[in-house]
Length: 388
Image 1 (cartoon, rainbow, N blue to C red):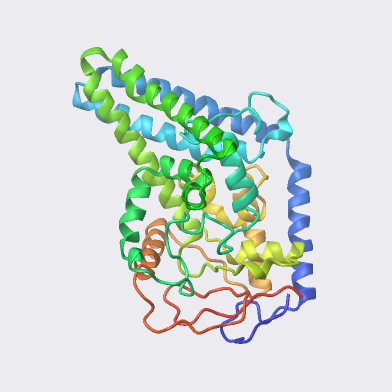
Image 2: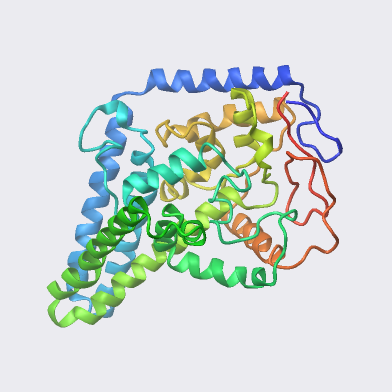
């Protein structure tokens, strides 16, 4: 990977192509070691989390049968929200990544797991595992970068419509699972290109519709009906639990991809990309959240987003173990390990959304692609990270 024109702003200007490939081999060695160590402890961990989550959900739904009583409503709603967060973040997301396929348990496998989410697992795996993790933070290739609805880079052309992106982002946060379903369908792109009548697209839409009906029936019909006189309060409790889960998931994802210090890349920057360069892009295009073990559990260990982007198929519990090794590599190669507490990272990500909803304070300086941008608020994006 060759350096670029403005070396003072280029975070990898000091690295040679040989350095980057050595870095890749060191990261491969970490991954290979963890793969070799996987075993019963990892299997016992995910089974314990699944059992705990199911008991918590069942217990919370039982409490909500009496949700006419305010204490029952509060306890049941809180428990159901936590159960839904655990299922989506630490269980569903990580199982669907294939992190536990090594167990060869047909009940806990990426090909059979269906999660508590309106997006069908197979569609999410395609958009997330195959596209997002391959093209992390590549403008025009990775729709996770702004979810396909926001301006996330100063070199992107500004339109008056972008003034509304803080509102779109807030609404997306509130109904995040539905936003993810639309993202998985590439709804905007398919509608713009007139593909809405294509048989394959229509089949995918029908699959999402079936999943939404199942989720609505479970959450907003059957469970409230079982509550009898507590129907309306149980309905409100379930809606609130889903809202909490959506806001939390959105915040965690925002913290991993949008805070100050995270880089974005042009499409041409990945032409001829080597293994080492792919690793380097994950390192520059991700950010972590610092916090307690409980924080890491509730984020599905996506508080270690850097480690997750480097090794998406390793059991999530292992990210905390290898994080010191990964951070040591950042230090040794003169790279910035972007991390911070949740409030700081959320505020930084939201500031980026707000800042880029406005026109650039001055015209973006044209640069030869590909390139990585600098931190939020940078006046001129750095030039390209180009393959040697």
